[in-house]
Length: 123
Image (tube, rainbow, N blue to C red; front, side):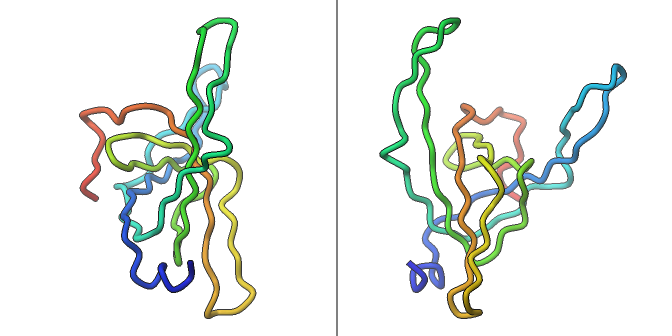
């Protein structure tokens, strides 16, 4: 995997998001700057990609991805644009740093849906 990161075949757009407080004290998130292009390896998480039943909506699809990258500009609040879909970060991005040679980030993403026409995916 680590050799593959040196010539990473995928590029995702990482959209940083800033926490704000609304008029009624509620937490809101707004895009913070332009999306940042990140070279990476994207893998589906098959054992978790499943259908979940919810009482309100019937059947809901849960799709997860893992992203491996040498660098990661995002955090827990960041969203990712990839292949026309918008993804949210699940948990904190994990930095593996046993040695400088093998250091990398691992990020788990959950699909939110199709990206909007107004999403800036060109970086």
